[in-house]
Image (tube, rainbow, N blue to C red; front, side, top):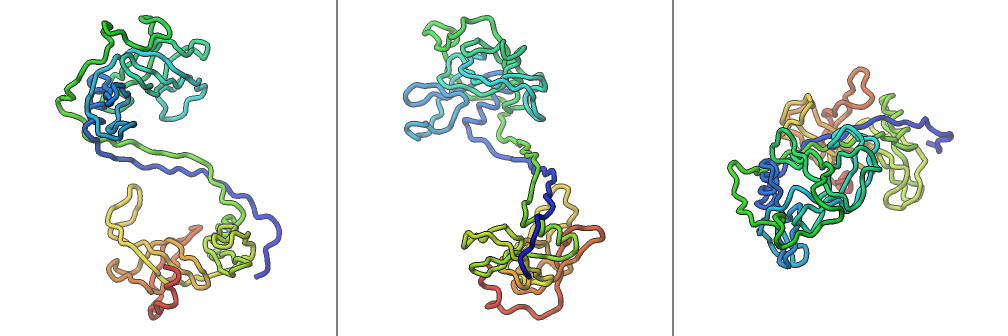
Length: 330
């Protein structure tokens, strides 16, 4: 196929990547988050005597494990700040606020959080602030709803005196019903622009065709096209139609059902080398029991009415491809 002339229509679409991130907690983080639930802020003392808030499990200087927990104050000093005039979804406050680094009394490091202030003119480095606790606390960082201005201490006062009640006090880290794990929702909202090569690829899929681009140097055909050859580093413009049939090169059996995905487990996802392509694409295999899917299986696309891309690939009934014909694409 000769080089394509003209500029394809610029495509873009909103895209959301969202998933719950679940992790277990070690003894130090467990104590820190459980403490927040109980309106207590804990730090950890390093081997050189510094108090780190939030606490870490290993000394940043010696890399040794540290477990010497101490309780610090709920008041502190702003060390630096930035005004946020337009809060986004999921941020601590829904009205304009300042992001601040606060060195809590008794700590040697600063904690990042939000400061509820009337405006940027009401915020300055060295100002005194205090924790505003959330009404309902479950053992997460947002148990600190935000910080608020505090008139009970002099600006710039950061280091506690030896006779000051804000001196960090040892803590046993013993709590009833400690927090042992957290689930944090992760979400990324953005606008995806596929570029020239993938715009042509998507336009062809809407016509139930699959196209790739050929490298002018090594002559390999890449599907989906990338706009440049990853091996030679040169631009690709020659459009080549491939498939529609292909060969399963590798596959995996999925046994965990994804949220909002209307596919019963177990099912199979595979890398499929379409006829004429030099790169395998990723797709679901259907129309065959999951335990009969195999390397070398010949497959073809299945389209749903109104769909812009194949729903899945199914066996063609042809003999399996010889291993030597696709071993370079595994």
